[in-house]
Length: 201
Image 1 (cartoon, rainbow, N blue to C red):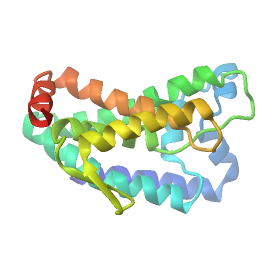
Image 2 (cartoon, rainbow, N blue to C red):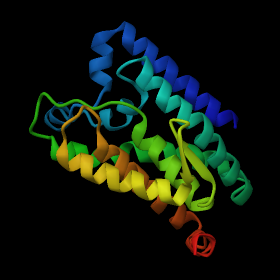
Image 3 (cartoon, rainbow, N blue to C red):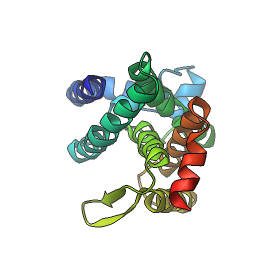
């Protein structure tokens, strides 16, 4: 689990430093317009390492702590030689992939910004659900449901809220991060889908 902890430390440190330097914070977050116009494509990745406020950071690190550690353990079991590498690869590429639809959607809007590790974290959560669909997951420690049900609710909710676009949350990144997490696992271990179906049905 040391890679999970290391990732948490890096995200926390980068976010903290960026809070102290507003100019750096602005350069690291995803501004689709500047990303395209100035060819600053690093923002697709760096935006996953900065956060808006302490609560935003806490929620992502809290989720990463549990699901990152779980996925790291699972990958180390199924892919003992490269499990840690695959874990980091999943998170990093999920952050990038989850941001691409936002980049396309808002590429002509110079005022739109997005930041946070949610795309990568969502990929970890749905990856875990694929491996252990019947494990109860709790939303804010209040509502607890089997992972496959909560995962389905999460995806539907992200689609609906993404279309509404009435809050400051990038639901598109949540959605595409989650979908990417499922695709990543199935490409690595196609038999996981049969195990998932057998467990649920």
